Amino acid sequence: LNIILIGPPGSGKGTQAPIIKDDLCLCHLATGDMLRDAVTAGTELGKQAKAIMDRGDLVSDEIVIGLIDDAMKQPECERGILLDGFPRTSVQAQKLDEMLNSKQKSIDRVLEFKVNDDILIERIEGRRIHPASGRSYHTKFNPPKVDGIDDITGESLIQRKDDNAEVLIKRMGAYHGLTAPILDYYRQKNILKTIDAMAEISQVGQQIHESIYNKI
Ligand code: AP5
Ligand code: ZN
Image (tube, rainbow, N blue to C red):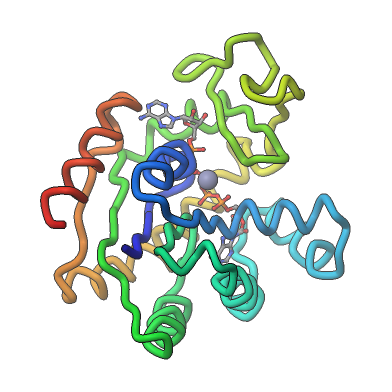
C-alpha cells in the first residue's frame, strides 16, 4: 500500500504518520525530517537547504526528488510507503508517478488533512520536537510525560526554527499556492480522501483508519 499525506503546516501529518506506519507496516518518508537531518549533519545539501527552510520557502524539486528516489531504495520500502510532506508541487507529483510506474507500482490513497488556517498558529507555536526521531509533541494538545523531554529516549525536545508566526505565513503561502493545486490531480484519479484534521488527535487517527480499511 502506498499512501500520501497532504496538508498545511501544523495540520497533523507528522503526528499521525507513526501510527499509520505501524498499523500498515509502511516505510515513513518525510522530506522535512530528511532535510532537517541533512542540516544537522552539515552536509552540502543541508547547507543549501537551511536558509530556504528557515524562511519558509520550498527547497528545489530536484533536491527533494533525489532524496525520495534514494530513500525508496531501502528494502523496507518494498512493502509500501507513507509519504509525509512529499509531493508538494505538480513537478514532484509527476516525478513520483514516474518513479513508481517504473517499478510497476502506484499510489493507492491520498489523505488530505483539512483544517482552517486560523488554528495553525497555536499548533505551530506549541509544537516541540525530538530532533533525532522527528516525533512531535504539543505543550497543550499532546504534552510529553515530562516537560521538555522525549517520552521514549529521555532526550531534550526543541522548537523548530521555522515554527514562528512570520515564517508560518510564508509556509502557508507555499501550501496554498503550490501544494493544494495537486489535490485535483489525485481527485481526478479517484484516490483522494479528505480528513477533518480539526478534530482531536485520536479522532483524526480513527478517521484515517476507517478511510484506509474501508477500501482494502
Ligand atoms: P515539513 O517538515 O514537511 O513541514 P510542514 O509541511 O510545514 O508540516 P509540519 O511538519 O509543520 O506539520 P505537520 O502536519 O507534520 O504537523 P504535526 O503533526 O507536527 O517541511 C519543512 C520545510 O522543509 C518546508 O517549509 C520546506 O522548506 C522543506 N520541504 C519539506 N518537504 C519539501 C518538499 N517536498 N518540497 C520542497 N521543500 C520541502 O502537528 C503540529 C502540532 O500540532 C504538533 O505540536 C502536534 O502535537 C499538534 N497536533 C497535531 N494534530 C493535532 C490535533 N488533531 N489537534 C491538536 N493538536 C494537534
Ligand atoms: Zn511534519
